[in-house]
Image 1 (cartoon, one colour):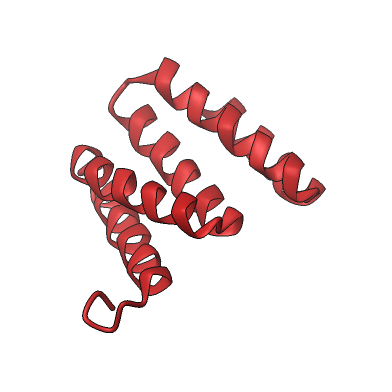
Image 2 (image 1 turned 90 degrees about the horizontal axis):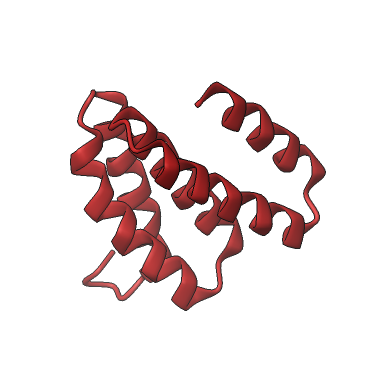
Length: 100
């Protein structure tokens, strides 16, 4: 994706690899990938993928016991959901927040 200058593809790949790390019990390895993914999503103004990035980041932070930071990321994601006017995603994220 990088060679093709397809930044959205890079963003999706970073999110996928970060999710795999988080699911494999390696949340610390996910964080730098998510930071890069977040930068790309913001540069592209891709709210949908930014929501994914921030949500995965919150999960990784929670797995590391960094609950205050995870809560801030969930709040950030909720703001994006509200901005996108996606009530289903807001509800889903509220449920996710209560499980952290």
